[in-house]
Length: 341
Image (cartoon, rainbow, N blue to C red; front, side, top):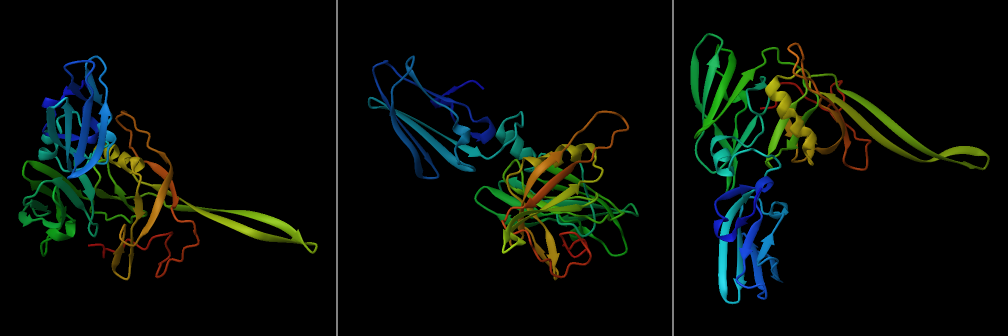
């Protein structure tokens, strides 16, 4: 991306596409005092000497200024210049202007219908505020209209609960629904087989908000014990045992759209396993943080190819001897019993 002059730095940018800023200088012998503030707090202030009669500010996308106004100013011997722009977090190259993307897309890289099922929790996030509506479709060909409830909001974003349990109708079976917020639209398609899910993971996505992924393939655990031994009084003893519980997940067969989306799990630097204990959901708020240690997300364009991804993960905490209370014959998590909503 080409640098822009300070006077042209305006509007909104994702952190993945913040341009370099050039501050022109009238004379090569004149130094420039450069100051940057974010949300009213000064984050940078230095006196810089120009090169080729300009000062260039680079790598601004690495600053922790998500959803905040970034103000940059240069004082060139009393001739002050300043500019301001909103910087929004993104680890994704969306290919269009940030304002164009966030006004027409929810904050997810999913570009197609999402498969869900009864009992699952689904969230959608978008920048700005406003209401959201849902058009539900039922097995008898009828439709229903609902409002999507906001379950979280801030100065720059809104989170709405679009779990399928919110859009059911007596005597009818929900088969699909479409969520609309402004010009944003996301379709959900029901999996009527209601497959068991393990693990269920909540992860921090490419736009800095939380999403759920429900894995329907085989779930395995492969504990490893490293034993340190010593002979004391002629007897061999274990004086230290380090346990690592390595879990192996399988997404199950994915649609093309969801295969492209599921890779976002493997990019995430913060992941939590979701459990339901005593009817209470335990996710990032009180749940166990885990670390993805390995993943395989191979895909192909063969007509008969069915994408499914496998991965390994382990507890982030040091103690891996975790007691799962009320566990009903499952490995690691206590879902899925249709009490998630």
